[in-house]
Amino acid sequence: MGRGRLEAFSDGVLAIIITIMVLELKVPHGNDLEALRPLLPVFLSYLLSFVYIGIYWNNHHHMLHTVQHVNGKVLWANIHLLFWLSLVPFATAWAGENNFSQWPMVLYGFVLLMSGVAYYILAQLLIKLHGKKSTISIALGNDVKGKISVAIYSVAIALAFVNSWISLALYALVAIMWFIPDSRIEKVIENGAG
Image (cartoon, rainbow, N blue to C red):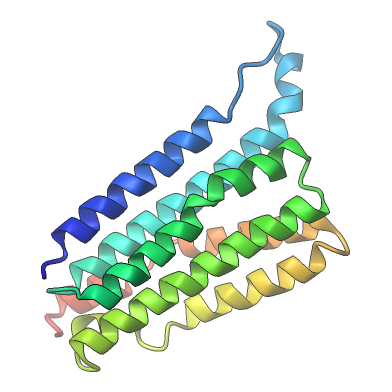
């Protein structure tokens, strides 16, 4: 089966996730800039999560651009990824509303960790479906960046029990790492591999 419906459905779910997150930004009670101060943690958590959803959308789009078809296993792996991403608004709201305290940051990190694992599973199933010499396999290679991300999430979760602000910094570090454009797939496509 073609990849079009999977891509369209995923785009729709990610758009809804962003919509849910923005609805958590409440209008302050007051008409001066001081009224915005209590909302700063909520806005910062929204900003970080918005960047993460954007990164997943971008990478998901690029990854699907390298494949010709999908199967039932890929569809379920994609649903698995979307499940974890759909929890981002809840984790975001809890972290922001509680000033990035310990347990909200543990949950936030766990959701990011599981999203990373789910994305890895999806990529591996697509590689298995298309073969080791396929465009996606060549483009992703050993996916060192993905593996480093999962390791950092794991460390950040553990460090939330020591200092939740360190966890937040590590989550932001991973976002920065992925925000810098990853041109592996584009380079492979331009060079005509696969």
